[in-house]
Image (tube, rainbow over all chains, first blue to last red; front, side, top):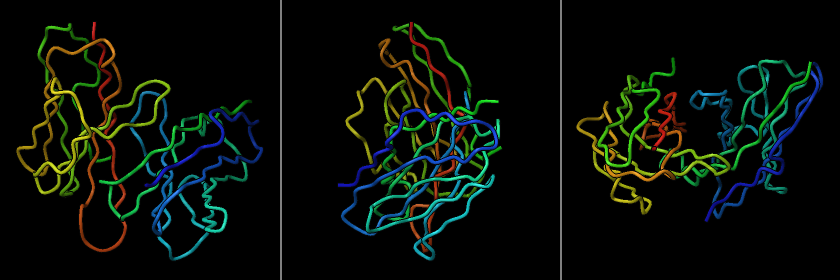
Length: 114
Length: 115
């Protein structure tokens, strides 16, 4: 069975400093991996997805993630945090390509301090 | 706008009421989903419809009843709910077969409060 662990429930950074949100997964197969963001009282928006073509994936708003099979990790990074990045971030694993088998992590709340 | 629209955005209902949540997708997808998002819990997949047929029902109580009349519309009928059913209910859509990767697109959710 697949599962996702997000190691930090809350991360706080200062504006302009780097962001690192950690995600580890467990999967019996070669997984699909996604990061979603949820702003307060909003739905989820896709930030980026791992398609197996490249291990370093670039997403929207300057975010990127690196797939490391040996570490079973898919950490999300951004070089410089912006106030608008404050939100909840979800790492998602799927053992096929489609949403029917999405497994969501518990989420990491990112706070950005001025 | 994500292409997935949910109504209403907020709903307060008594435990004896009957209400319905509506979801509409304008993306041409063939799969639709209901998720429940409660505080301090991971998102829970409630129902999946692929090509208008239900393919997943994760042991959801019968007081929640889904309906998918066509590939663009999805309803969640609610009756005799409990206070612990208060949550954000999210609808999503995606492709369910084909090539490539098909991420799910989410609506903005319905915030349900059961009193």
